[in-house]
Length: 84
Image (tube, rainbow, N blue to C red):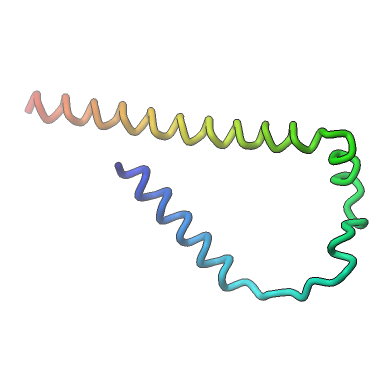
């Protein structure tokens, strides 16, 4: 359960940080997105979706690993308490 508390705390701190950032005006050239050629090329070829899927898969893997590790630690702590 501790891992969830840490994740919640981290996400709240991150959102507080984002809330304090200064707002910038959106201009018409922001919508056209002509300044980022790599993203346009990847989007045109459909590779951007592969990139997003890989990043999400890695993130989900980290979360799954953290949860499984937390469960194992809880089990070991319970066994240690039972022995004492």
